[in-house]
Length: 78
Image 1 (spheres, one colour):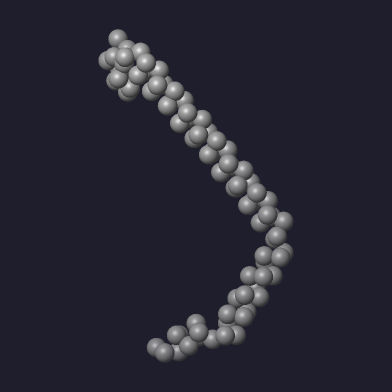
Image 2 (cartoon, rainbow, N blue to C red):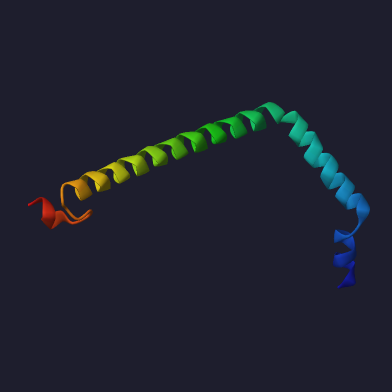
């Protein structure tokens, strides 16, 4: 069973894996950059939506406090 462990630790294997990763990373660099850019744009949009939603919730809570209603209490509006 020691044979499989020695294959994983062999430096030539790691060199080949690194060379293959570098080759494919270079070959598809434009696609990778586009995917990362798209992901960061989606993340930024999501954060802006959440910030706007939180601001709306805080504003509703402030209005409810000023009006004497308990925030989140649906019976208070009736």
